[in-house]
Image 1 (tube, rainbow, N blue to C red):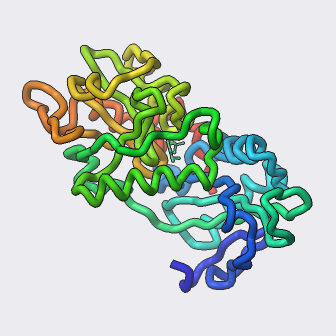
Image 2 (image 1 turned 120 degrees about the horizontal axis):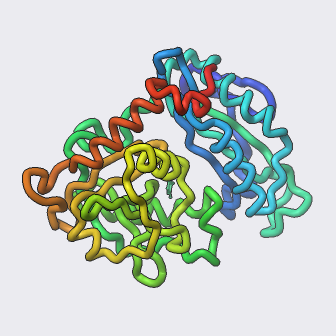
Length: 309
Ligand code: PMP
């Protein structure tokens, strides 16, 4: 991935993709204190547009705030940088990755006095959990790894260090032949996927774990809450047990990369009932359709969520 044509925005300038390098003694590389975002641009009916750019950028600044890192750029500069990388790489659609990290000025655990950096890269990225997964649903396993407790590495920061937990969970699940992991919180309640929020549907009501279960406050999760309201679906945020998911009528993951991905199986138990056992459920399909209408610019109500580049 490192040696290719293209441009990356790095500390205020667009540099050649293959020249966007940092030193091995960078603080974040050693201790994992850094923050990032995952943002998508869609080829909408009105042209290329970034979905919920402001919310993602605000979350990046909030993640940095939680980690006591002062991003040396303004919000406007970071918004502009994300538009610039899409244009500079001639992408019609794609995934945008802003990342802020601590520099190589010194290497004690304390980052005080060190420099803070920011880069933004963008590339083409299709369905994260596969096209078939989007249609049929994916197979998921409860992880043996616990999602971070809310008072460990701060679960509302999209912190670099949080992702060791996600990596371990995802590798365990995929090594065991599943598509993705579902993590429980430190009390044993369902929290989220390795990189996705969770929703379940039961008797026409949509449920999602409340954020005290340590899940990231996903921007797609928030989009789903809006969609449910528009569809007249009741949403309840509460503690959810793994066996509530086993007997749910439907379940799906939400995330910028995963978009809306149905879950057809958890721990080898097929989810669903009637003619959609073990496949995408009807409410999930409705929410998925509404989601793709919004991100592709086909729903004028949410035109303000799309920043044309
Ligand atoms: N949880 C985790 C751990 C994630 O990495 C992500 C992806 N950012 C999400 C949830 C979903 O968040 P969003 O919808 O903002 O992408």
